[in-house]
Length: 140
Image (cartoon, rainbow, N blue to C red; front, side):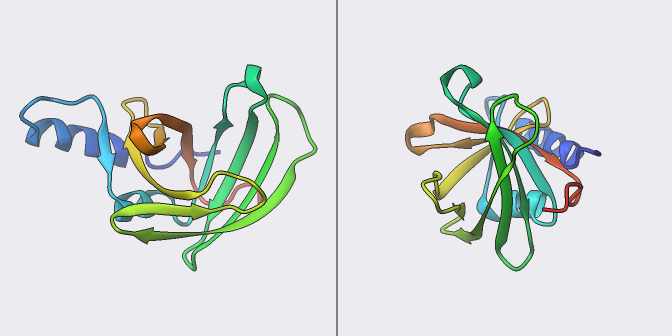
């Protein structure tokens, strides 16, 4: 799998540092910016830490506002559970609705120096960290 978005994320970090009065380690992404990075691609990460019942997940975002995802118990092989949802950009935030009790809403996102992206809950608390993978390699 080829990871996408790292060059773009690093470019955003450099731009943020150049135009900031105090160089910040993180760059906040507006809704349209995160959409540009992930639509047409797949994100992959973990919901919560493995030790607290977390799950591995993959989600593919399509240009028509759909999300097709899969999850399984953290660090286990096989037995993916599939789900569907929707995304949109609203009030400069990237919003997801994943249904079936999964966390949804409109969130802020931060580009990390290692090329990953963090979704933030209200109050700036980290929700999930994910990487961006080119296209839809697992045919979600």
